Length: 222
Image 1 (cartoon, rainbow, N blue to C red):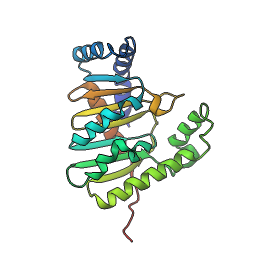
Image 2: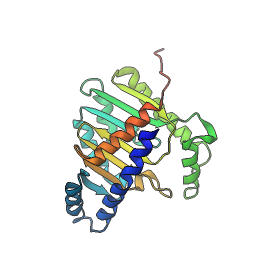
Image 3: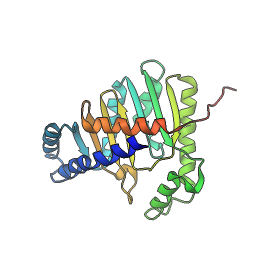
Image 4: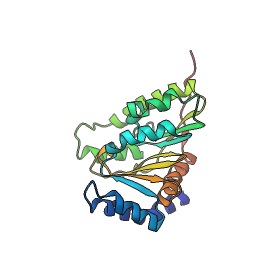
């Protein structure tokens, strides 16, 4: 896990500077100083979305033109929504590979998923014990069924700190930085282009988590 820890520690200051720099300006003028700072520092950040949900439309467009896609999600609810529809419909014909990482829902109360659930329960009473694991199971079943028909789709489970949502393609990376007292959709999201430090960091986060994950059980044809 040394690579994972080193990547997180070394990149947090740069990420913090980018986020703070973006929030110092109005919505209309925010992107110019962010892009200037990104160019000067090599971060590669093109946009800062105050809330992850604001990136949904742009994300859908990026996914529709990608050659390969990597997704590390906190529970994966978005995977079954319209923003990812084109991804699954074309998964067997155009994409080189689609890799999905979800939290391991079968590790019980000592898992990082359970810790995230307890954290969210402080601000959202709807997070009853086990609800996150149930949602992950449902979303994993969806991806598993797609993978049964599309050989380039694969799913694995991770047990790591639930700190980010990461979506990486051959061109861009969307990095959401989860906040302790907010849903992921309300947390800030960075859009970084390749090449750039934030793009490389997002890819490192995904690759390291993938290497320390377990395969999801395959669903056999009846």
